[in-house]
Amino acid sequence: MNLLVSYERTLARSRRLLALGSNLALLAIMAGVSIDTLLRYFANRPVAGMLEGVELLLVFAVFAGLAQTQADGGHIAIEAFTERLRGRSLAFVRALTAALALALFAAMTWATGAYAWRSWQMGEYSAGLIAFPIYPSRFVVAFGCFFLCLQLLQMLLSALRRLFGGALEPQ
Image (tube, rainbow, N blue to C red; front, side, top):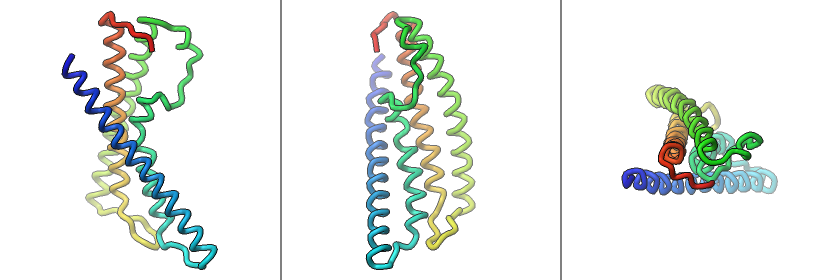
Protein backbone atom coordinates (compact mmCIF):
# COMPACT_ATOMS: atom_id res chain seq x y z
CA MET A 1 0.00 0.00 0.00
CA ASN A 2 2.87 2.36 0.80
CA LEU A 3 4.31 1.78 -2.69
CA LEU A 4 0.98 2.76 -4.25
CA VAL A 5 0.83 5.98 -2.21
CA SER A 6 4.39 6.81 -3.26
CA TYR A 7 3.48 6.12 -6.91
CA GLU A 8 0.43 8.38 -6.68
CA ARG A 9 2.42 11.24 -5.10
CA THR A 10 5.22 11.00 -7.66
CA LEU A 11 2.71 10.86 -10.49
CA ALA A 12 0.85 13.89 -9.11
CA ARG A 13 4.08 15.92 -8.96
CA SER A 14 4.99 14.85 -12.50
CA ARG A 15 1.53 15.70 -13.80
CA ARG A 16 1.66 19.17 -12.25
CA LEU A 17 5.11 19.80 -13.75
CA LEU A 18 3.94 18.72 -17.20
CA ALA A 19 0.78 20.83 -16.88
CA LEU A 20 2.94 23.83 -15.97
CA GLY A 21 5.02 23.19 -19.10
CA SER A 22 1.82 22.94 -21.13
CA ASN A 23 0.61 26.26 -19.75
CA LEU A 24 3.98 27.88 -20.46
CA ALA A 25 3.78 26.60 -24.04
CA LEU A 26 0.32 28.19 -24.38
CA LEU A 27 1.71 31.43 -22.97
CA ALA A 28 4.59 31.34 -25.48
CA ILE A 29 2.12 30.70 -28.32
CA MET A 30 -0.04 33.65 -27.26
CA ALA A 31 2.95 35.95 -26.87
CA GLY A 32 4.50 34.86 -30.16
CA VAL A 33 1.31 35.24 -32.16
CA SER A 34 0.57 38.60 -30.55
CA ILE A 35 4.07 39.93 -31.29
CA ASP A 36 3.91 38.56 -34.83
CA THR A 37 0.53 40.22 -35.40
CA LEU A 38 1.68 43.57 -34.02
CA LEU A 39 4.87 43.53 -36.05
CA ARG A 40 3.04 42.40 -39.19
CA TYR A 41 0.40 45.13 -39.11
CA PHE A 42 2.28 48.05 -37.57
CA ALA A 43 5.84 47.57 -38.85
CA ASN A 44 5.21 45.32 -41.87
CA ARG A 45 7.82 42.92 -40.38
CA PRO A 46 6.36 39.52 -39.49
CA VAL A 47 8.41 37.18 -37.32
CA ALA A 48 10.10 34.61 -39.53
CA GLY A 49 9.19 31.01 -38.67
CA MET A 50 6.38 31.91 -36.26
CA LEU A 51 3.91 29.51 -37.91
CA GLU A 52 6.29 26.58 -37.64
CA GLY A 53 7.22 27.46 -34.07
CA VAL A 54 3.57 27.72 -33.02
CA GLU A 55 2.78 24.36 -34.65
CA LEU A 56 5.53 22.67 -32.65
CA LEU A 57 4.59 24.40 -29.39
CA LEU A 58 0.94 23.50 -29.87
CA VAL A 59 1.87 19.81 -29.79
CA PHE A 60 3.57 20.37 -26.43
CA ALA A 61 0.62 22.40 -25.09
CA VAL A 62 -1.84 19.61 -25.90
CA PHE A 63 0.06 16.43 -25.11
CA ALA A 64 1.95 17.56 -21.99
CA GLY A 65 -1.36 18.27 -20.28
CA LEU A 66 -3.14 14.99 -21.08
CA ALA A 67 -2.44 13.24 -17.76
CA GLN A 68 -3.42 16.23 -15.62
CA THR A 69 -6.60 16.72 -17.62
CA GLN A 70 -7.46 13.05 -17.03
CA ALA A 71 -6.74 13.35 -13.31
CA ASP A 72 -8.96 16.44 -13.10
CA GLY A 73 -11.79 14.69 -14.99
CA GLY A 74 -11.51 17.23 -17.78
CA HIS A 75 -11.86 14.88 -20.73
CA ILE A 76 -15.23 14.38 -22.35
CA ALA A 77 -17.32 11.83 -20.47
CA ILE A 78 -20.86 10.59 -21.02
CA GLU A 79 -22.41 9.90 -17.64
CA ALA A 80 -25.96 8.99 -18.66
CA PHE A 81 -25.28 5.38 -17.66
CA THR A 82 -22.75 5.76 -14.86
CA GLU A 83 -24.52 8.51 -12.91
CA ARG A 84 -26.97 5.93 -11.56
CA LEU A 85 -24.28 3.45 -10.52
CA ARG A 86 -22.88 3.17 -7.00
CA GLY A 87 -20.44 0.99 -5.08
CA ARG A 88 -18.99 -2.05 -6.80
CA SER A 89 -20.93 -1.51 -10.03
CA LEU A 90 -19.40 1.93 -10.47
CA ALA A 91 -15.95 0.61 -9.52
CA PHE A 92 -16.31 -2.17 -12.12
CA VAL A 93 -17.26 0.27 -14.91
CA ARG A 94 -14.42 2.60 -13.97
CA ALA A 95 -11.94 -0.28 -13.88
CA LEU A 96 -13.14 -1.50 -17.28
CA THR A 97 -12.95 1.91 -18.93
CA ALA A 98 -9.54 2.62 -17.37
CA ALA A 99 -8.24 -0.76 -18.60
CA LEU A 100 -9.54 -0.17 -22.14
CA ALA A 101 -8.14 3.36 -22.27
CA LEU A 102 -4.83 2.11 -20.86
CA ALA A 103 -4.59 -0.53 -23.61
CA LEU A 104 -5.37 2.05 -26.30
CA PHE A 105 -2.90 4.63 -25.04
CA ALA A 106 -0.20 2.03 -24.39
CA ALA A 107 -0.44 1.12 -28.08
CA MET A 108 -0.35 4.82 -28.98
CA THR A 109 2.68 5.35 -26.75
CA TRP A 110 4.52 2.50 -28.42
CA ALA A 111 3.62 3.62 -31.95
CA THR A 112 4.34 7.31 -31.43
CA GLY A 113 7.56 6.50 -29.57
CA ALA A 114 8.78 4.38 -32.47
CA TYR A 115 7.81 7.12 -34.91
CA ALA A 116 9.65 9.74 -32.82
CA TRP A 117 12.74 7.53 -32.69
CA ARG A 118 12.76 7.17 -36.49
CA SER A 119 12.27 10.94 -36.85
CA TRP A 120 15.24 11.57 -34.57
CA GLN A 121 17.42 9.08 -36.43
CA MET A 122 16.55 10.75 -39.76
CA GLY A 123 17.10 14.22 -38.33
CA GLU A 124 13.66 15.31 -39.52
CA TYR A 125 13.13 19.06 -39.85
CA SER A 126 10.17 21.19 -40.91
CA ALA A 127 10.08 22.69 -44.37
CA GLY A 128 9.59 26.40 -43.82
CA LEU A 129 11.42 29.68 -43.53
CA ILE A 130 13.28 28.30 -40.53
CA ALA A 131 14.04 24.57 -40.37
CA PHE A 132 12.82 23.54 -36.91
CA PRO A 133 13.56 19.98 -35.79
CA ILE A 134 10.34 17.97 -35.70
CA TYR A 135 11.49 15.03 -33.59
CA PRO A 136 11.23 16.84 -30.21
CA SER A 137 7.51 17.35 -30.84
CA ARG A 138 7.12 13.72 -31.82
CA PHE A 139 8.79 12.69 -28.55
CA VAL A 140 6.45 14.98 -26.63
CA VAL A 141 3.46 13.14 -28.15
CA ALA A 142 4.87 9.80 -26.98
CA PHE A 143 5.85 11.24 -23.59
CA GLY A 144 2.37 12.74 -23.08
CA CYS A 145 0.72 9.45 -24.01
CA PHE A 146 3.07 7.62 -21.63
CA PHE A 147 2.12 9.86 -18.71
CA LEU A 148 -1.53 9.44 -19.59
CA CYS A 149 -0.91 5.68 -19.36
CA LEU A 150 0.59 6.15 -15.90
CA GLN A 151 -2.47 8.16 -14.85
CA LEU A 152 -4.83 5.55 -16.29
CA LEU A 153 -2.90 2.83 -14.45
CA GLN A 154 -3.35 4.75 -11.20
CA MET A 155 -7.09 5.10 -11.92
CA LEU A 156 -7.33 1.38 -12.73
CA LEU A 157 -5.57 0.42 -9.50
CA SER A 158 -7.82 2.76 -7.53
CA ALA A 159 -10.96 1.28 -9.13
CA LEU A 160 -9.73 -2.28 -8.51
CA ARG A 161 -8.97 -1.40 -4.90
CA ARG A 162 -12.54 -0.15 -4.49
CA LEU A 163 -13.92 -3.18 -6.35
CA PHE A 164 -12.03 -5.89 -4.48
CA GLY A 165 -10.69 -4.20 -1.37
CA GLY A 166 -13.99 -3.28 0.18
CA ALA A 167 -12.97 0.37 0.44
CA LEU A 168 -15.87 1.81 -1.50
CA GLU A 169 -15.36 5.53 -1.13
CA PRO A 170 -17.90 7.57 -3.11
CA GLN A 171 -16.49 9.79 -5.84
